Image 1 (cartoon, rainbow, N blue to C red):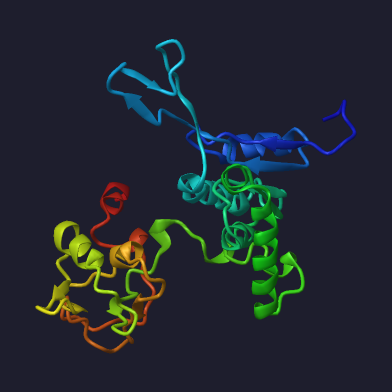
Image 2 (tube, rainbow, N blue to C red; image 1 turned 180 degrees about the horizontal axis):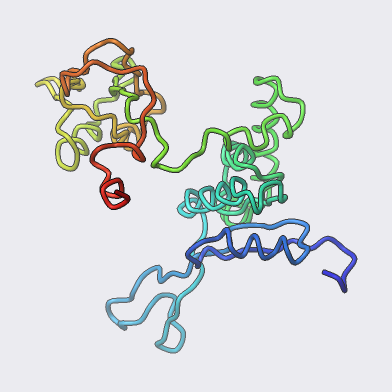
Length: 268
């Protein structure tokens, strides 16, 4: 940077254990901003006839860079880590990875990005997709009363924390909106076979939550194809949790003080 007068934006790889370290190094080196993420090392498929990775060149294949919507959750997590870390807080961030709709862009901005970059979506749908994102984002901002992206840039960072700090006394139960439910059964299959068997299915394929079994893992919410059909409803303090039979506490408690935390015994 000492030999170059123009702004320098350092693009960060996701193929690393802790993205905060190169981000901090870039800041110490005088970088004006960082952009992330680059693509993830990957082999997409193997040709079972030629027994070589695809795409194959003269019978040989190699790893490539995985990109698009599938990498968005990874990218947003890394963006939030840099925005939250004291060493890099305030460092301008350009978000990259799976930006396909205006909502994707908005989510990146709430995690601290000042702008986003689009590649895969433009390759898939053409450059017109960018204008569609701008239009959609502008409409959403008007609805929310935002006049500039600075109004909501980084707004989600104060609510992003480490798992150990989550409130273990917060109790919620899944609730299925029967008017919106299309009876696809995905929530039932996911919960019945891989979670807590907390969803019942009637003969006419009406799906209801069994509060005595629900642990609010959110799996049903994630697999449901209808937005907001399944929501998590907070249980009021002072009521009895039908799963545990215990009164829901209003006190905050997290894993760092939980009696089942083995590190507490190790510290003693």
